[in-house]
Length: 89
Image 1 (cartoon, rainbow, N blue to C red):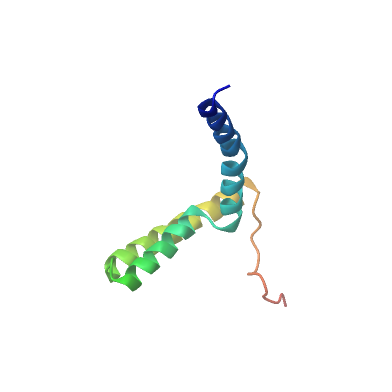
Image 2: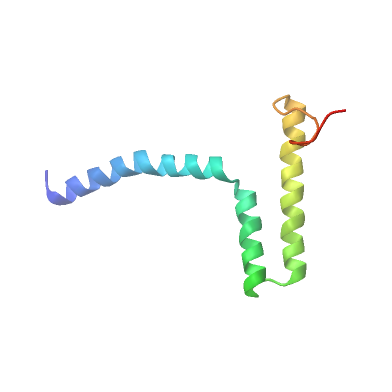
């Protein structure tokens, strides 16, 4: 095995282990929609987006999250209830 082949084999093994691990960690930490929302907020603070563009991103984020929540309720994988931390009287 040549040095070049060995490096390619190590690179393939690295991708099989670390790329899925990174995706798993990022998937657990935050959704892609939330990442876009956070980036839009950073962009507006830096002056790269105007207010109207930020509102559009925020509306898409809220609409997308609502769709995910409603789909979860319909499929039965998500329960409807009071917000976390609120008291039931």
